Amino acid sequence: MKKQVVLYKKLSPALMARLQEQYEVTLINSLDADGLMQLRDALPRAHGLLGASLKLDAALLDLAPQLEAIASVSVGVDNYDIDYLTRRKILLSNTPDVLTETTADTGFALILAAARRVVELANMVRSGQWSRNIGPAHFGTDVHGKTLGIIGMGRIGEALAQRGHFGFGMPVLYHSQSRKPAVEARFDAQYRSLEDLLKQADFICLTLPLTAQTEGLIGAEQFALMRPESIFINISRGKVVDEAAMIDALRHQRIRAAGLDVFEREPLPHDSPLLQLSNVVATPHMGSATHETREAMARCAVENLLAKRPLQATQNHQALRICRSCAAQSAIRAQASASFTRSSTKPILICPAALGPNASPARTETP
Ligand code: DGY
Image 1 (cartoon, protein in one colour):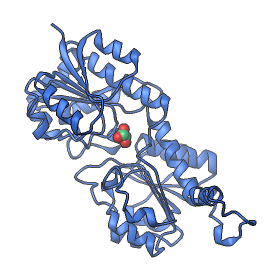
Image 2 (image 1 turned 135 degrees about the horizontal axis):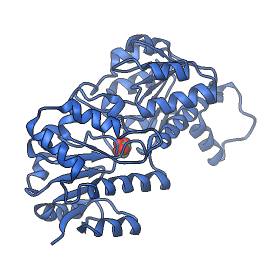
Image 3 (image 1 turned 90 degrees about the vertical axis):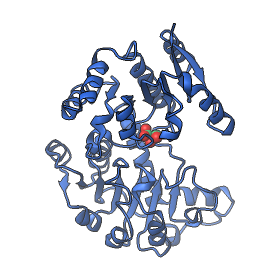
Image 4 (image 1 turned 60 degrees about the vertical axis):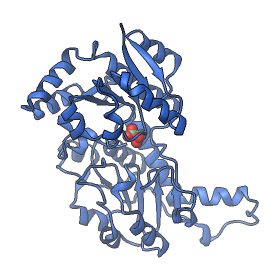
């Protein structure tokens, strides 16, 4: 008898067929109240789960006593309680790499949109308010040649640096857990303390994962260090930022503008004060949202499940064994690193124990 996978994300017919070669598949079509009820009903039979954008906490996963693996269609793993998964010996996999370039494109779209006031001015045209040539009141600020500050120099940070350095002639500053000599050499990037980066960069871009260490990293104190010309970009996770402090800084023009793809609460509540601010460009967590990339992510997640045929095959089995003995978390991290190459779309399976609170942003970057 085939094992059961519960999908809480729709797959293309080709990927669905691929998954069904090995598993009995139950599809939960949407995550509305009905869908969540169906999910709760299906969990007791689930050996595998595949999906995204759902907080899978202990209350839900306790309903799935047979669960062996979760394939997340995301690079970020902040929706999972890693300690809980480790205790339950449930393998978690994510989909890094395939979304790097697309997410960096989103970052740059926000940089350009916020600096050149693209959304605000396009709305002006659309609403019939363009009656004469625009003047200084509608001018934006240049992007090319300005200083790009990247906080969290993982793959996405690197892809942003590449765009800034080669495409826009921007000096690149970065802050991350460790120095990145290769990045420094390729993009002339300079390492800064968080404080210095916040003081010196024109564009301050967050590309780091949400962890216990990064939650609330950018608050009132950090916004106070930025300059009135600074533009703040967040393509990581909303909770890395104290949203109230950010709103205050934007409202009082202590910083120039923000381009935000992620928020403390998603979907962003319709009455969020952010939506009242003309110096904010807000997008709906669309970092990786292109047809090509979302399909690549889904394929990667499917392969992650299939690679563990029957949910405990070679590499994963080894990871699981190491997890069980809790003996060599770093060996698993090394294994994950070794299987990653920039041009590869090979999925990486992550043992939960390898994603402890000190997991490096370079390996677990968001989004
Ligand atoms: C990711 O892959 O983590 C994206 O941010 C979607 O959640």
